[in-house]
Length: 470
Image (cartoon, rainbow, N blue to C red; front, side):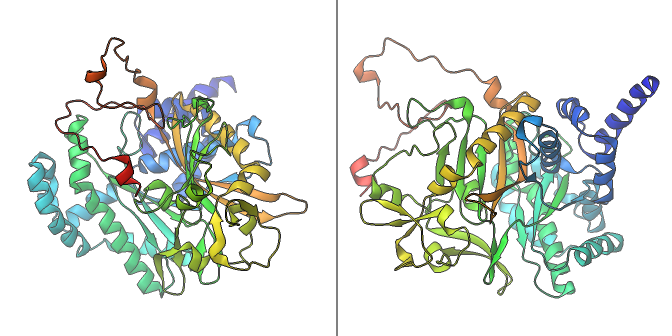
């Protein structure tokens, strides 16, 4: 048996390199956590040739790290969505089939030329055809999953890898999947074509150039997942979702600990936490002090609470953004964990199904943070992943809150994505000069200052706080 261990190790590494990633840092971690049976299951869910890309690689590795971390306990109730993987070679097959190879020189053009051409690229890709064998496999997958909504996520070879952050550079598209089989297949192939086109997105190409990755043979794999959520009327969305960071760089009070992590939490689909839309606000949670807010003033808590929710409208067969007040009602099962009543000067926990006016509901998540194991469990998740990755990480997640016997609901955490933030571990904190005069300081702050550095500033636009908050 001992003689077979090297052969088994070699088999695992070959499979990881051929199916998942050729990054040595990834392979060194993955070979410790993935088994040959795990890799066989990936192969069974894979469509087409090539690797499954960075986003899928991160999710799978996180799943197996957490599954095999004893400190989280058997009842941690951590899972991943049902997932399928489209290999990266199918991207080139699509390019070749439709004679789109002429666009491959985009990465060597000027930024202005890239931006001028991109709309034409998107139009061309939407008109492109897929190989019959590929359509057959995609259709078989759709038949298997039925009417469950899907999200098609980009998972390029460079994406979510060590040393690069492609967040927001490529597309992820929801497919509500409520039409006929033919309609659902058309919507899915349109989504795939749109994500393939995003390889030529000027923002991605400029970022690659800035990181010395211009000449890399970038290929787009796809991660297709069933959308996590519960049905509520005509809508489907998770009870809560968000993004969590193993290092908290947004400390609004001195007692907040960097190493305990940070969460942006929303009701509904996590898109409003990940994309940080300008007209709305997630709940900011310092995991070391989860109930400590940047401001405890009731008017500020209400003003900076979530006002809109992203969800799947099953009846209309589309992704929708709706006002919270138009969706949230007294019969929403986990209402008391995510919302409180604004009593004019203070917030009251919900203790009854009778609510005088739903306009007084405010999404605070206070009861979720106080009376469920979410905070401690998320700290444990982030700690385990950072330890295994040898690097700070961030994760995307969805939550389910199902009432169980007893006072606490059964909390489920679904891991949607995990990526290393290796640049945080490698960067050094800047040393500030100690001999500056008052005239040399334009402004200073010790409140909510994240770690970062910007060089060669040519212009500064100063907006007076009084006018900004008016």
